[in-house]
Length: 149
Image (cartoon, rainbow, N blue to C red; front, top):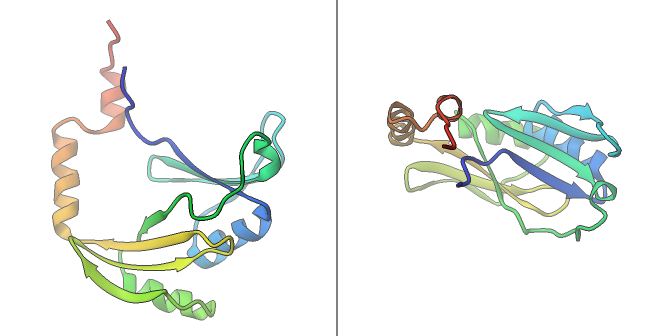
């Protein structure tokens, strides 16, 4: 058995409402209220094939709360327009968009102090993804053809 894909990113916060408000209204994630099982209310959405969620620390009593243990990177198709959007919320990037390998990149800190990068991937990267899918690296196709025997 092997790990097939990353299924979720979960941020744990002492002030999950504030953090979710930031990700929803400033970053633009389509977060919705969630609550299931015996968890406290939290927020979640789907980003591509990945579930993104923000939980209160109370949902993970065995976990330590920390800052900076995860760095997030979100794809935007127009990084200059996105920086202008951030500025309407009085948020200045830590550095202006700059070329780094096959992408333009900038970053901010979220209200909990986590580093968030924003990338505008170049055509070379999307061509690479397309080639990977053509070679069978699509999770839905792989799941349908999975045979453990």
